Length: 517
Ligand code: HEM
Image (cartoon, rainbow, N blue to C red; front, top):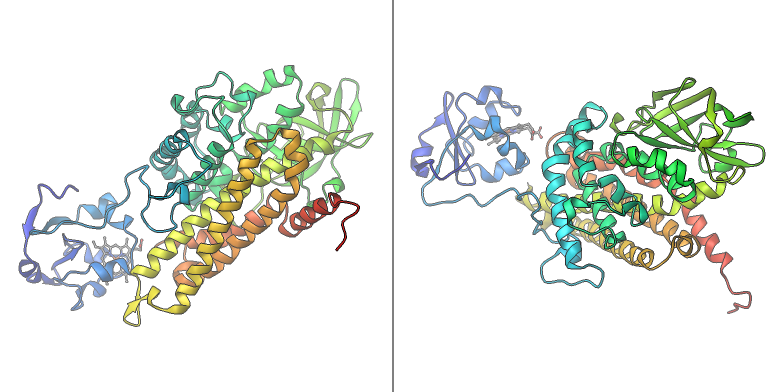
């Protein structure tokens, strides 16, 4: 509600309305009439009739108990009847696209007065436009879907597709040629991994982890095998609809029988004339409940082969109930005598393991970026909460033990961000093959570090928020979501310990034969 045309009151006038049936309060210079609302107040009526609230300035007590967004909801905003004479509100929500001024809430390159060797003006414009679009269009959908568990709506997918969102999430490359990216804000040949890093970190800021995967992450990991190993005919047939958000893809590798041990998959594909006959199951398949195609690793003769399996007769999917929202579409997939045209083979028969492994670096980097984006929001939430919450007569951050937790959180997110940027810079300067050779180890180690940092931060944040950190609504809702879902970052695209080991094994391979102390 605009405060311009509002009636003005003095504190003395407000103080006269301090009882049941006639109850006014002030929050941040705005006068609210709670006379009728009191009985509907989710926190109960009696808390509003106390000496420190009724007819008083209740700003401090209010912000110790509610998020600012409560006041912005139309049903509560209309309780405002005026403002205090000569005073203006000081607590304002950020405008869409606006940067937070809370220290460490934004990465260094977006903080006033700091510079960075990595980002151009184009990256800055891109970041601003992406955040604005996400806040205005995607955030309401994210909150809705995270809550009701439904698939992202086609309307939002269409809006994202207009900007070529999915194409951009697949990184720089020839698939961008001729496309108008972000309404023309960035030219396809200019688009680089820092643009993609921005997309990924911005996307993770909502505190809706299931939705992050539900936002067509299946396609982000299922399409690269088609890009890198598909024939021109296969690409012409399947890519346009996928990038336009008209057909959905999922990557189907893991099984109840095989997780980190990718070579242990049981799903088989046997040749029968011009077809393959596929039998088996896949588990934890992101976007699987609504995918139209499954990029599937099968055991074949010889070795392993990747097939693009359409949702045809014999393919069935059912939701796997996990700790995050079913909007991610996590599925158990059954292939029962499924007839798949041989023409849907991606890469050479028997070469499936290379097709799948070549995909992992980008996927792991992407999961790391989203983990990082979410982690930074948690740091901001903790800085705000410990500043506004009064306990033992002081803000929480007056306690050294609290500041010590904040110090560790800040250090972890800054270290993580710096490592991600350094790797991203390398990706920008290496071919795909060079990345596979030189970055598989560092990306694995980086992902292990960032996801572990995230889980430590989730743990610390929950301690800072107490009961609110384990409550799905209200002040600690983002902390609760992050605490519950940060293990996903430690598991998806490679379990933490397995990745740490991979990183060290890669380093061991590259040890000079003559290295000695
Ligand atoms: C315009 C005034 C107010 C509105 C619109 C409002 C609205 C709400 C809402 C929507 C909730 C549910 C929790 C949430 O979503 O955050 C809530 C909870 C609560 N409110 Fe208010 N409230 C107002 C003022 C106050 C004031 C002045 C107090 C002071 C004691 C208060 C005390 C509480 C308490 C104790 C809870 C429960 C918090 C919890 O479960 O953690 N409210 N209020």
